[in-house]
Length: 402
Ligand code: ADP
Ligand code: MG
Image (cartoon, rainbow, N blue to C red; front, side):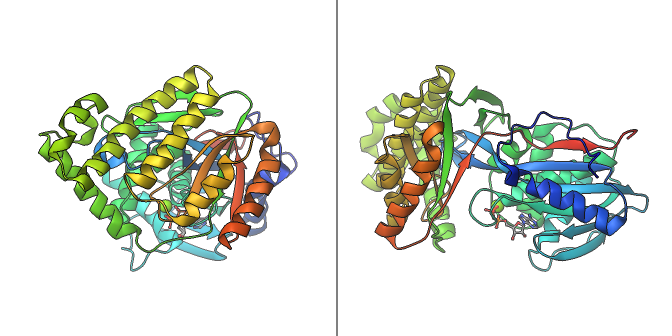
């Protein structure tokens, strides 16, 4: 297997980041007695700014991280998929004709859902068999689910005969998650996992699905700070916020809060009750911050980008009220560090992760100090990940002649 070559010039500085690649190729060899025909990967993601804007037809600004789900595979002639999950220590098989409806949400149902969604959209799929593993932490809000879906879509792409169009594949995977697995999510996770670009973040217009990329400022690392806390409240609070935003848009006669700028809102804000005013002000100001974040990145201005992230956190905490004591504590620990340009909660809130823009040469020390200080303050052990912006779903290896 030492002859296995990775065609791209990977920039992994850290050997452990190759681990899932090695795991899937070794397991494939052990199971099937020969080298895989393909190795694919699809990354997890973190949203840098633009929170609770997606369902208001607004802007989000994620990057794909350098942690991904990998599949080593070969085609099968019988329209069946056999998948081995190394991480779940499980193997499952399903036919592409007559897909079994999920009784519960098992890992294999993500693959079945992707197959269902692609076939619903008219993609003609062939079968494959292979081994899957990843290093996106599962259930931490870094979207291991989208990484698995896009890796599966990429596996089907390798053995079938269709064009890889990132937005179309992202939509198909989102539909798998929404309609097959019954999980409510916007388009961001699948779109960034499909279309991520190395060293760049992707501004996504959640109305038109148009994307534009911007470079992360030179010499900066993005550090993900997992508070180690999760809240059950998220669903009901999410639905409530969503209804409040829709009501505010309706009041102004708009399709969505995306359609009003901060100045116009300022002139009419007094028409709303205080709670609706705060909710709307977050969404409208967050959309503006997200567009200004793009300008800051294009200008290479890390300080301006960091400041927008800090403002975003304050708005999410005070106006949208979706932060938590743990999130506020870890963001405060991050912002107290000299190497940090700005930190904010990321994701739906009430727990989960924050994200910080940090000088790359100081990122490791930053992570160690923030972890220690947060643990001392909050009494919970966090997980910190120093990350780089990576490429979206891709075929990393293709055997000669295929
Ligand atoms: P996240 O925030 O990580 O997306 P989700 O609950 O949405 O959390 O998705 C996690 C689920 O996705 C897991 O329970 C599992 O079913 C599936 N999954 C993710 N990564 C893997 C993997 N590497 N191998 C097998 N299943 C995975
Ligand atoms: Mg998920």
